Length: 400
Image (spheres, rainbow, N blue to C red):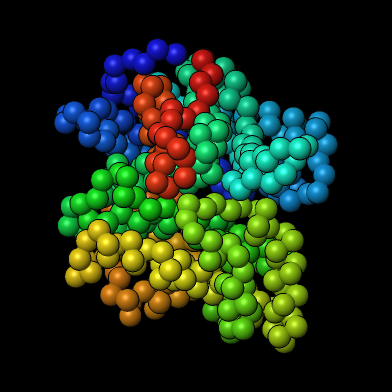
């Protein structure tokens, strides 16, 4: 596709994350910058969330965690998710009374392997997001950009994280260091020193966000998540378990790095619960310890990698803000742990909505932006974050 001159468009960004709890749609007006070479202007029109049914969530989790799923099952799920995404976009457009000219759909990740392993005589890295884009394009009769990660992976990156492009475009500051944390199923962090150029952005997955907490809640309480962190508030932290896990290889590996259910899914939850039980933990203690693992993995990542990075680029006297988005912001116990941990470091904890984007809308906005960039032939990855050898145009276009 030949590059076109960029213009203003209303774009619907669609995201369904590793928590597999539903679909978030963000409707954005995206316009070229008035300053040549600067980031595009992004205005959020509105955002809406649509939960998966129990049956759909169960099917998605099975596809993610099962040792073997039939090709027929994955094919059916791919098409069913396309219908669900189309329904969600139509509902959001109706709710806010606008029409979209373009859709950016991340899809549902069912497998992500950012680090190479040997397969059929070759070192292979791979990623797979499903949700048939043709269904969305036919329903909306507009182009759909999907499958964003493979282009970065093919260029030597890990295919993740991709949200740093939005972080830099929308939230960088000339005067304040900003660390932007998303708490979805997986936690990911973007560190932007005050006044930094895009090649000085650091971003990586910190480890589990809500994934292990949700897994423990499902296992022990038959619930999908710990609403408000109420269960975690009742228990005590088994510190020895948290410390032991943080000594494992993923947490000490240097960025760029990414992870998913392959590292912190069902098998990990089995092992985690077993470790807690061996230490004498009650059900509530297990959930509290899982919550502490998320918080401590973030502090560990900040101390190991981010503090020095910010200090090298800007004076330590510069104020640092830690801005949180994603479903995890609804977990009051997790948020309190984060505030208590960052306070001694002089870091101010803020919510993404304070910067004008609702917490659960951020990733939808990110993929709206990336779809817009792709449509106009612009690169969308941040090689400093993903490890790619070069900036690349992301995604595949399905015409409506």
